[in-house]
Image (cartoon, rainbow, N blue to C red; front, side, top):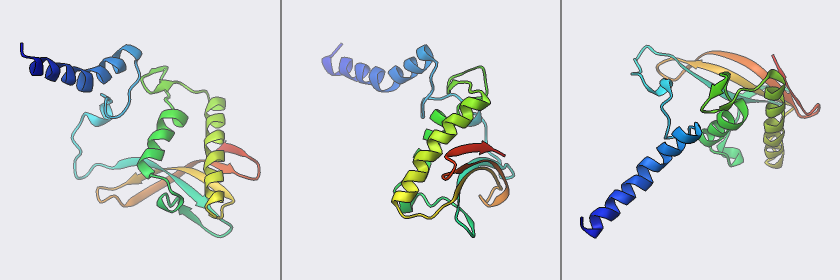
Length: 161
């Protein structure tokens, strides 16, 4: 075998196969090396998308977090949140260990405390932060929103709704 062929095979193994072997051996999934069933089907025009969002409340209004205004990337923050804070409800999950309700509240308190500090450092007025689940239609328009928890910077605690 020629030297460049061997290098090409080695490159393929390192770039493509190694992350998959890691995910299999350590049972930890990470984008894009994931075989989650949610990615394993065709999306129809009539399908609804369920996602989550962070909401900010000042004294008068409730609005979606404006990620770019505070120097955050929406996709990266949501991936971080789902991987390290929200976790899994399954006993043995590739996304991490199952959290009890107490652990879930503690993880969210820590996360929203940091998010609140980022908002304050960017002069974003807020007296409450919310975690909401949104249902969007095929045109990505909001059809339904359910607030599942809130964080009070004054109390320094996340609470479930």
